[in-house]
Every structure is written in C-alpha cells, then in structure tokens.
Image (cartoon, rainbow, N blue to C red; front, top):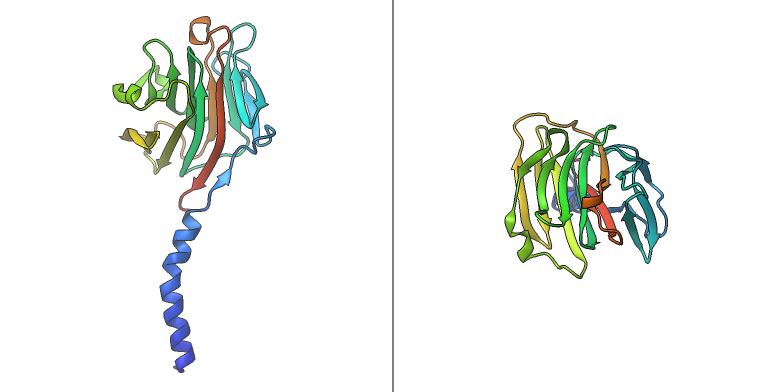
Length: 215
C-alpha cells in the first residue's frame, strides 16, 4: 500500500468516530416560533385538542370554552429520541409532554401539573390512570414565574424514559413491558375540567427541538 493510501486510511479511522458523534448531535426544530406547521390538534381525552395560538415565539395553550382539552401532536411519528423545550405555566395548569403517543392520545406523559397536589417532571401513564414514577423534589428546581427547561429521552422497547427539569434528573424509569408502541407522536396537553385550568391560566412552550437516536 502506498504512503498516501496509508495516510488516508489513518485519517478515515481517526475521523470516523467524530463523524458519528457529529451525526448523533443533530437537532431539528419541532416548532418554528411563528406557525403551528408540523403540529395538529388531536381530539382525544374527551376534548377537541384545546385552544392553541402562537404568541411572542411560543406555543400558547388554553382550554376550550366548555373546559375541554386534548393534545396538540406532531404530524410525524418518532421512535428513539431526546427532546427538549422551555415552558412557562400559569397557576393552575394541568399539562404534560407526551412521548410515543398512539392515535387515541395515550403515551408516556412527563407531567407539567402546576396546581395543587401536582407534579412536574414525573412519569404518568394516562391509559392506566396513575403515576409510574413520582419525584416530590420538583418544587426545589421549578421557577414559578420564569421559563423552565424540560428535557426527556425515550429509547428501546420496553422503553427507558428519563426526564430532566432545569438539568436536574426527575425521572429515570426502565419499563418491563411494551406499554406503548415503539413509534408514536409527540404531544403537548391541555387537560380538560374546570379544576385543572384557571379561568385566565395558560401554558407556553418554546424552543422545542428533537434529536433522533440511532437513525
């Protein structure tokens, strides 16, 4: 082998891991800050999807006039990924980030329940009506009047779900069964019911982006 080919081979071996790392760090926006392109209302959970607008670079969520809600979901399905966003919630608000959502609106929910007896950053299973994992320390890290960073990661089947609130780990759960499909939508929730949402309460989401894993 010529010296040139040897050098080329060495460079290839040295740079290949870097290329993999770079590829694995590609993030894509799920919200452009101006429109609801890529999202759709999901008439699930007893509602039509809630009322959603775009204001000051954020997706703003509210209940319908009859206190119904639902989800706004991505038009595309995702499998293994990491997602992050910033959110700001009035009191009281009952919302959440849904992962691997089925057509009926069920999926793993990272709770954003800023209300009495609520939790933020815990893991909930709507189809089963109960928490999978709770973290009561969320109040130590939550910014009541500011923007909060929420990050979640879901991989494998059965799924491994991790969530962070302002870079502090809130949830780390390895499921032992195939509770939801390997691939599903990403959803943001407006919970229905008068007690779940104040008359003037709103939830806001911005800088939503995703990094697919193993693709």
